[in-house]
Image (cartoon, rainbow, N blue to C red; front, top):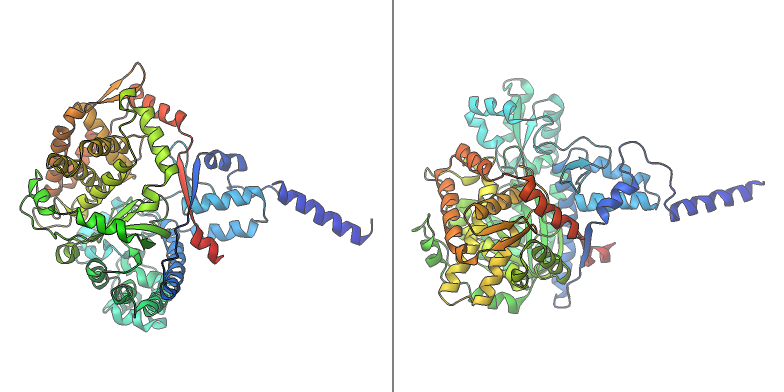
Length: 598
């Protein structure tokens, strides 16, 4: 065979291998194609493609820059979740030659936001060659545990506040780390100026004057090059819209400064109190759900949103009387709240980082001092909340779980309004402990479990109040109640590091214990006793608000343990029915706006 024919033969065989997925066996540690397909077949994939024709030229220019910021934040999010995330992605890309196997692994990385995924058995395992996931993710040193850090925090209370700050990483005191962090301050004088005292702390560690095992490092210094790039892009986006949307431009300008100072007050105030035109954006690190160690570290996200003006105005007009609802709560009456919470109905253009996926709604900021001074803003993501395929999945799950007489109780608007009042519920109730402490800090690591359960229960409580006062009709109220039952159904026994799923199981068990739900073992279905709904909701809400007010972490843990029981005869049977009847277990969301940029 001559050289020319030999080369053509090699090219042909390679092309056939790529086309048919016959690529060379991947190194050890990569999931097989069969393992990936098992999860992929249970994954619903949707693409969000809102109509952007209402955007002006300036808004389109700003949106393009904010999408670039989102891509940066997405990398930061993945890096903060796992120390080998970005490295493992680059290795996978290097191996990718167009084969079905590596393409499927890349899709799994995208959906999982890193090299660790959730299996069909609800276990968190690596699917790429990477270490197992740790509770502290990559915002604490590897191997960190509460048993290691707690004694240090207790012995150094003056350092504890910074170490457990929302936007600092806990850094191991090593020569390499300290030198790297000082070099970032030298490279970016703006960071040096916005973090007074940090250079002196680092120099004390370098000289040995401070021999602490760990130190707190602001996010902006930990990820300095990326943050500075995002800072410039956000400022440029602000310049794009400064003439036609000055409030949005002011928010962007302040938020750019926020992410380099790690102090969000200026941007939060402008975000909550500003009145924007077509665009809105959630930018920064807020939510702490991924911190399974102390539950206090936030993770990066960005959501670029297109306002639906008509739906937003209609909804805002219907949100009166919040103080009356606050005063009617079993705990927390008398606390004065902002009456004019900004509520917007939006279509998602693109989500990044922590917010990417099936996120239906947001209420921010979370900082109780910012909330007291400026209020909060609610962002309802309409094209996720009312997506027909996603609602079809919800309705199927509900109908599988309940008796036939309840099958038609859940309608499209039920989940929408349950979610709306869930977000408002974060704003109502207890905002600090009786001693004035932050709830998340006082109840650590259980703060998110109780905050999310409180919001669920306030949603149900408020809907009952609106129904009693004639604001919500009986048909919609029944659908909201049905959505509350859907909310607590579990297809797997949750892990304690899953705040949402854990608090949902707690509600489910409480509802069973107190007669709102009953389980029929003959057909493994639930009967809903709607006549008990309001009593049971008020009773559980009173307990949850009381625990938040008391601020006792040990009492919180005891309450959780009391209501997370899982029995083979009930929970396993119902979960198995749900799994057997469910075509999809996972969701992967893609965005047309990102495809257009590629």
